[in-house]
Image (cartoon, rainbow, N blue to C red; front, side):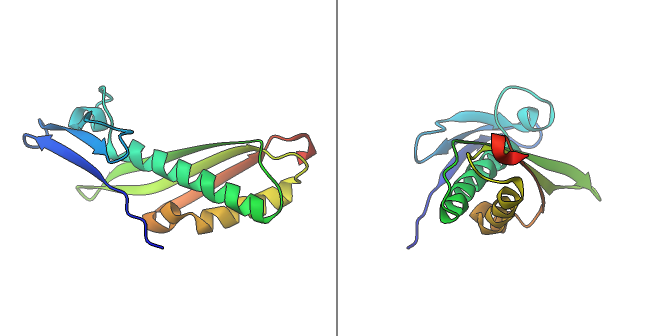
Amino acid sequence: MKIKRSGSVVWHGGFPGGSGNISTDSGALRSYPYGVASRFEGQHGSNPEELIAAAHASCFAMALALVLGEAHVVPAQLFVAAEVTLEQQFGDFAITAVDLSVRADVPGMQAAAFEQCAQLAKQKCPVSKLLRAQISLQAALTSAAAA
């Protein structure tokens, strides 16, 4: 099976003064603004790093739900956050790390088994495979059985 998804941008102007609009085929983003100011100065609009973070968090949550299902448990809730680090190195910018964090309510699951599932999901997650950055993971089970 091969699935293709796409996004596009329209960019106006040069760097650093230019700006653009991001769109996705699904319509989740439709001409959403982004630019140097939203990337480096905290101004309104999106940036590639937060989009990568959202993509990674959503992909990891799906991968973890799959792995948990293979372990015959169903999560009541997964809260996944991803923080992407962009830093300047030797005059160029690079994405150097992604920090994933997951808090999960999985009734009846023990913490050690959850940690194993989370690590396996990190390995299986297609976005994790794509990024090749240092990816850390903090996994916490919030269910009563976690003790």
